[in-house]
Image (tube, rainbow, N blue to C red; front, side, top):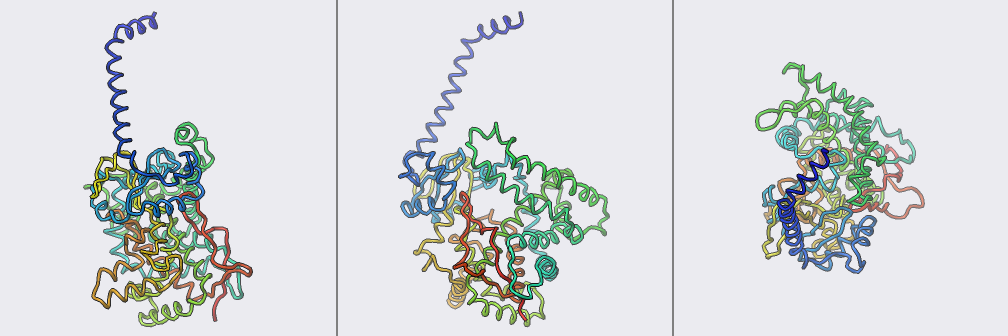
Length: 511
């Protein structure tokens, strides 16, 4: 009877419902047409591959080649690239970066792009937390002058603890060792000395980072329309969820204990700065949320810092002829600063800085940078319309290979940026000298991003990397194993480029 009543009621109202449904369908179709219209005249990279499915499969194994191909063919104009995700990606030439960085967040969203590229719906990566970048900018970065000697002590202690004696040439998987060294050093600042050395913390910080990236790559392999149905069944997602629960179990009691401390008892670390920054224009966080934020901070710090430092180590081994100059600079600078890694000492290591910057130029972490989700349709200065709903990005890796931007672009020139800084300084170009430092954002080296959402933690990361590398330079000779000719090639995984984590280098302690 009830079913008949419902059927009769629906039947009676059907003449009223149908126009509404038709109107909704018309709106959806109109939006699709409007969104498609600005895209119709935008060329696609990999046109010769034939279909979007073939382009998607190609992206998974050699995305960098697709970006470079598109950049060469459409250098000064936009083009589309087909990724494993369902959203449309428009690649924008770097000449538009200055106008793009001025667009407000309600037009182009940094978090919106990260949400999609990192599959935050399934990986549960915390996003949109403005307290974290605020705390980094207002508490962490200004504290580096005070904290640098402490960070240096932690670097030295971590290297001693993690590396073997190396009295003779010793094979070392440096990526694996650096994961722990970076986690120890970062943890000292993030959560305090005592807790950062606990195996529970190291296990959570390191493996959450690794497993989050594994989950992202696994989701990339799944067709977008299938993800809502199978994501929760993926072993990588299950493993990530278990890791998060395990980390919560460790971190939440720490947060609870911090809440009970008197002001005079509070530690001087990132966790405490974040907790003290709550309220006012920032929300009050639950204990669980604060624990999750700590995981997010660890991911952002450990993953990219380890990749960059591993890349530098591979270059030190591949180009041993530059080690004497680097060693002499570090020795001289430290002697002038009483053996202490002060901020001034780190600034004075210009050859080390240049070696790091050139490594980052030649081995960028990804094929693209400056990803933004377009929330509102806008037009570039040339009149090109960029519709809402797409993701825009800049072809970072292609720029680094452009001989018109970088002479001898494919060649590793360790003093390239030291020379550019000196030339700018000699001509009175203060800005030019500054933009060629390792830590600076530069439209032609986009690893740290660009604009107001450039990596806020890059100053801490740069100091940490410099200290680790300077200690390696002063303590060890480093070379490739016998039979290895040339630098280890990076692994290209989708749009990511990572130093091969399976490789070993030979370390020997110097007299």
